Length: 92
Image (cartoon, rainbow, N blue to C red; front, side, top):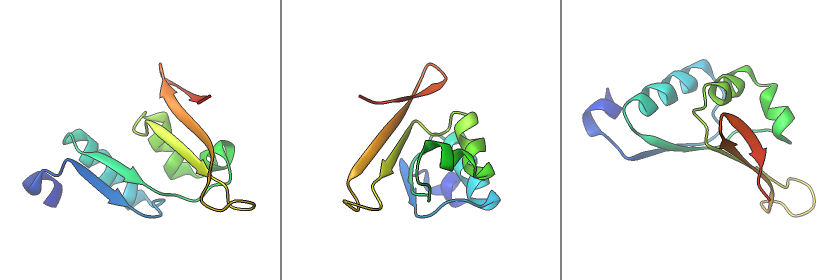
């Protein structure tokens, strides 16, 4: 109800990964709201092992996936994947 009544342009959430998170994200996107979210995963393949994240990816609700280095240079961008023509491609 908050998304519908307040009509935010962007919502942010840390560590998504539950069915409830997914449903809220889907409803927000249907209302025209964009989002910035974090989730745990070592790489793109690891992220696809999470059924909630996989569903959001397969439904093309995630435009960009940024993988951060968690070993050598914590927080530094390791890889970026972008949704291009219904497929995720590693950015150059």
